Length: 341
Image (cartoon, rainbow, N blue to C red; front, side):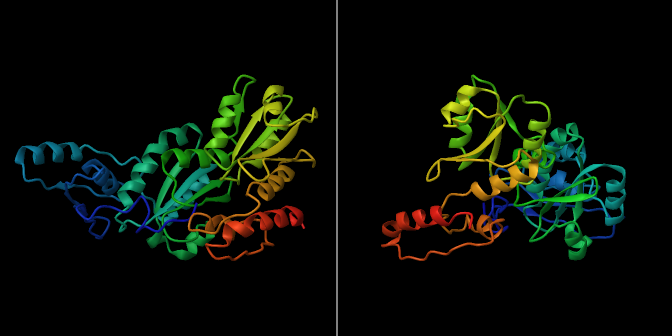
């Protein structure tokens, strides 16, 4: 998935919404002015965002006096789900907690209320995972601090800090995606399937381009832990583990050897088996090298995957729209033969 810009991402807001955050001294009262519109964002979303950065009062403007009074009273009771931290406070938080999700934001972005809404939606589940959520003004912190945390590109940035190690999360994930990405970084995102769950495996494959399927002796123990560890830094493919021989057969894993891992794809190479040592680094390298199709069409959605791929030797095939389909089979066969060289 390409990294969207604020102007074309889901965070872009309709022009009818007006949200003003006055940048004053910390002791001043911030008064966001909210103008209602038929957009999906509610006044609550704006007020919550204002409270995150320290607003003491939220002013709601509405032509109907009764509506104005009712909503403004409700907004006054809103509490910030996360309080924005300064850089020193962030460092103290990281020193005191082994798992911290750091969200660098730009409070002047129209998208800021949506970002707060997504982080708020994920906070409860993240807390259950032992993850502390810290929101930090990325503009105030400065580029050098963000780079120290391996937070690159335009804001917002997401970084999971685990035992002092920085694990960035690319893109702009929504609540559910954010939870999934954090679980991956913690090695908790492997989907376990029983012998009767083959339909779930097919559903996972239909929802993505590929899955990494492990057939294990047990869903607990060293094998399962190695597979889970391999999934940590690979966001764009589902990791699935099973002990069911029928699921292995259904996905054409004919080897009786256990444990075994294969990458299952929708097209081209529908099945690629792993024959290396069953270690997290070996599995991760195998999945990274085989998760993409033989030929990736370059477009806005695929450019991030292409330029951030661990595969450093890439061949660029250029063709006109009229001849692309004609030459594609030849290019795929060539890719199959030189793969791994």
